[in-house]
Length: 275
Image (cartoon, rainbow, N blue to C red):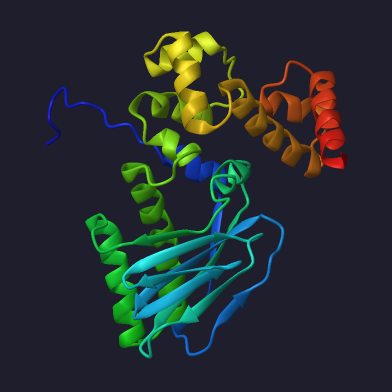
């Protein structure tokens, strides 16, 4: 029976994950005997390397960092890197995570450098999925590929939860979601980006004054509230246009006042990209 008047816990991630629409593909699972090289590609996805057993070296440029199991290494796809065996018993799961939703660029922008994270003291749900993957690699059974695919999706959610709860990243959306005040506003923006958002309304949602909110948002997110919202709206609109839905519908879906306003925003984006 639910407890009467129990406080409602803010769900910080569901709206973001819905906007990300992630797709996880397992590229390798098992022993890694030779170095795995990952060439730079457009920054449209994440490489997530789970170190299940043993020790690996994550090399990016001239820097190499040893990563001992259980651990995870995350690299954006535009970062050339290599995963190098540092022990004979190394077992890894290498996943590619693509984002089909408009929130993808918001998350990808926070991974401008490789991230290596020990999972020895991580939350129990994250440790459970790592243990499940380790057991599957040690004792393969029927439908292993399907199990690892779903486990990869759960691993991604567990990783996002951990990064938010521990505020591992110094800046960006996951750091912002780890801030109790900013999280309320960010969740609301992710749920309803087309709403009539003003700085006053954002600050009120966060329970702060306008000045305090704007200062904390910029310090935590690396951009102003308006720039963050505009970037999200423009990505939403761009995807609508690319899908052939027309400027009018795209403007309405993304919260622009008119098709003309959206057209100007798209033109400015194209000019900035060309420059």
